[in-house]
Image 1 (cartoon, rainbow, N blue to C red):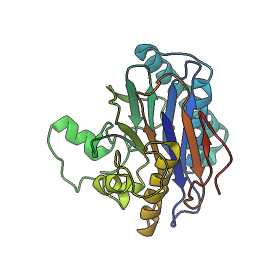
Image 2 (tube, one colour; image 1 turned 135 degrees about the vertical axis):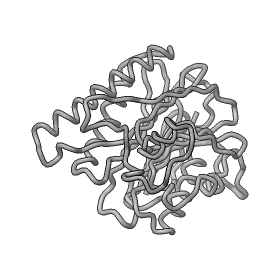
Image 3 (cartoon, rainbow, N blue to C red; image 1 turned 120 degrees about the vertical axis):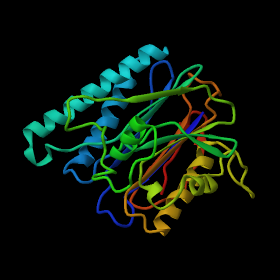
Image 4 (tube, one colour; image 1 turned 180 degrees about the vertical axis):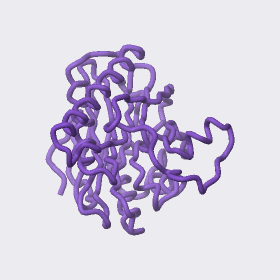
Length: 288
């Protein structure tokens, strides 16, 4: 199993309101998360980081491996993270409306659980095709789902979020589950990339399951997917993406599921290329 992620503030934003992370519990199961602070709300950068850090570090202290227990635990932890955000807002009125989206995934021994609130997304990349696993919780999409048909594009506040963490006391995660194949890749992303690259364009850059020409790292390895993510972020920046961009890839989900895999983190103001080696089960060195 390999996990890599990259996050960049982009050319138009003064700071990065996205947060991303990968954490392993005591049973060796990975939890990956992407949170996108709601840009219109002051303090949302803090909200995104609070959610990722709260859920991630709590996950490292437990050993759950059963689907229902994991779901119940994550719902409870998301509620605790939401309460923490609200508590901070109560003590500081300047950030009383801070909020963040969340998309997460947990690899168990026989399946992958995915949940989201907001418009950060998860995709299953299978045979070079992308299947969206999440639902964008916006006014337009919620009304269309209720009506069973597309809704007038001109409705007020059509792109406003209907689910997120922060502001409201209730957290409502939406769940989906799938059984991974050996060649599947899991792709999590904030909404920044979609503003300048269609999902087909994103897949064309990532080329899941396609060996790149030349003397490159082993396909699906942590350095391989990190370089693919770097190319994706560079492509978004080249199109003057107006938002922060964050993307995460997980590969080899059926390979020793339940044991700690390789992880690589890149979170800078500009995309970088991995040029250090990775030891088995552990990143050695750093990225420049």
